Image (cartoon, rainbow, N blue to C red; front, side):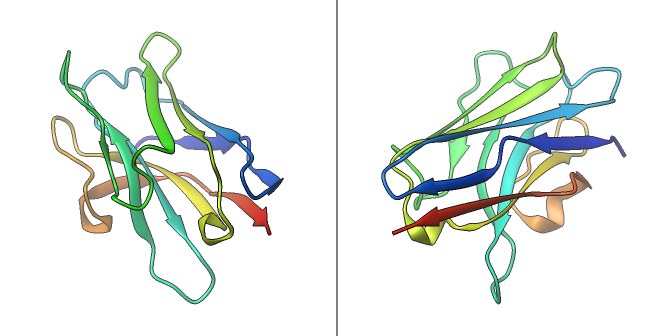
Length: 125
């Protein structure tokens, strides 16, 4: 397991933007898919986006955020980012950073091996 610490959440109006960051204490993130999940009140935790360990590989997104959110990583800084644009009220949730097992994807909750503590994102209408 690796320690993950999110930052950057907050309150924003619909149509606005936020950028989340996830820093890790791991020696490296080069071997890990790193992703973001979210959990709204009364709902199950769901996959949002992830960036792959594969050099030149494409990030992958939930359909609900495609075209609005961008996930990226800086292996040297051991940090993962989630740029969220055109935010909507239904994006309101606690957002969690997640890491999979080495060389494995993080497509689902069951594939996650390490979680951050979460950061609240609230989008007002």
